[in-house]
Length: 167
Image 1 (tube, rainbow, N blue to C red):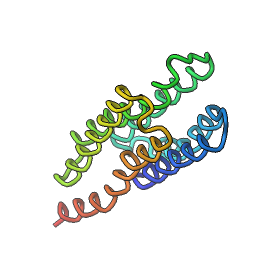
Image 2 (image 1 turned 120 degrees about the horizontal axis):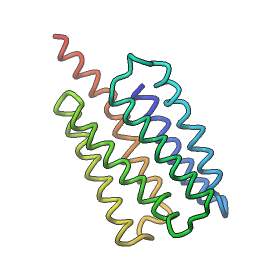
Image 3 (image 1 turned 120 degrees about the vertical axis):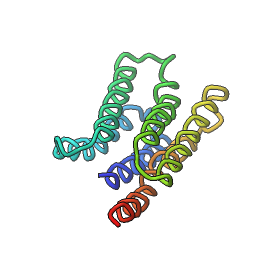
Image 4 (image 1 turned 180 degrees about the vertical axis):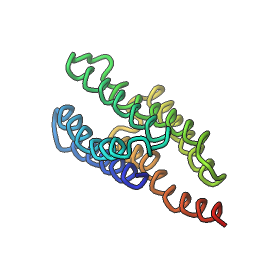
């Protein structure tokens, strides 16, 4: 499950960056790309049902809420909220999610990984609040690095922790 989330998040952010550079008004394309990409881990989470832990449900719920907010801003064309919703919100979302993850995962290496991801996401959000154009053209690559990559790095850390716990 962790691998699927990591791959889809990384892929969705990289596709977002690509679409942002190739389409003049790509908001709808980006939103539908995210909806399609996030459907995979969300459906996988639903299929796990009661076997999924609380962490999976927190991330699934938060992802749905953030996407609904983005679609809402797009539909009502709330131009003053668009920059925050499409950019800063995703760093804040990542910071909150990774802070929660750092608090609940087992293993010190995993806790450190997610605490570091929390700090990097907070830094990204702060940069966008202070200088909205600072990461322009690279922000979704940055998001792929600070949100998707930590989940991918956690896959071997989780396996190692589970092996150590079994011994």
